[in-house]
Length: 309
Image (cartoon, rainbow, N blue to C red):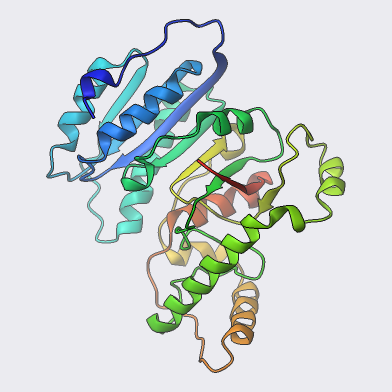
């Protein structure tokens, strides 16, 4: 895709939303994916009068930073390109959490007054054209505080906690068992999202109790944590909430009893396997801490849409 043609923005502001939007992308060696992602960002920008994009990159050796600077100079909306030069933790989840927190720092301390912020992966998961109409639809509903989306194959199991799964999928001593748990969760969440109209039968009652709007008749899947490569957040529900990629810090948010309940539940799924939680693990998917913190501190509603972008 020709980067020179990416920024063909429509200058007619009459039909644009006045929501203040910030898109956050962490970049490391994403050079070959960036032009398509720029294209999607530009499509999205056409819908808003106030649109910001924040790129935080570090340790790139593929000239991603050159593309980012070139794109910044071509855009007619505000683009921040931040070199996170001190992001050198040996743990990948800690580095990603640090980069995402840099984005949040720009949102809350530089731009300010953001209505919704988007966290978007900068790899091949976001190179296909986004369905902008779906994004616009959900921005006009009020039955969620964080929303992520289905895919033809739901892949982001590490960020996912829901129902009886209150311990992350890679947090077990036996990696063979962890792979089996991931496969099982992937099938389970895909089935639940594909059949969401047949579950959560009490949604209408819950909606009225929470004074949520019913404009959108599509049911959302309630969970504790999800991401799946692209998620939107109601920014005021995530004020003072940060990402964290260390397992030891999740213990204030998920209790030992809840982890043990997950273990016992999985034992019924895999009765012939020995399932043991690895208490020496170091890394944790950074989205889990972010979502659970918002639930605990701000009563945030974390949801998944059955729709694919």
